[in-house]
Length: 170
Ligand SMILES: [Zn+2]
Image (cartoon, rainbow, N blue to C red; front, side, top):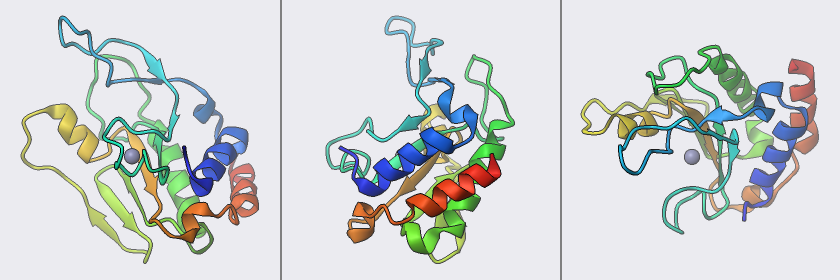
C-alpha cells in the first residue's frame, strides 16, 4: 500500500495533471518468454508498486514512478514520443517549487538525481552488461520520486498547492 504522500501525489496527477498521465505507456519490461524480445504492451504511467523485493522503497509505499520517456531514451522497438520529457521536467519543476511542503527525499530522472537541498548530481552507468539495466539505473523512462521514512511520507499537506500548480500549468 502506498502511504499518504504517494497516494496524494498519484491522485493529484491523475485528477488534474497533464492529460498524457491518463494515457497508456509502452511497457518495455514485458518480454516474450520464448524469444526474450520486448513485446508491445501498455502499462499505466503512474506506478507505486515496485518489481523488487518487499523492502524495495516502492513496496514500502514511499516512492512513485511516473512513466514519461526522457529525451535520451533509446529505441525499445515501439514508438514513443520524445516530447514526453517536457512533461517530466515540468512536473519535477513543480515538485522542486513545493519541496518544503512535499518533503520528498529525492527525485531521479534522465541521468540526474535531484536532492531535497536543491542540488543535482549525475546518475549514469558507464559500464553495463544489459542495456535495460542502464536504462533503469539512469531513469530514462520514468520520474522516480521518493520519501524518507519520516512523517512527511504520511502527509497530504501539499495537496492543494500541488493541484493549483498542476491546473495552472495545464
Ligand atoms: Zn522508482
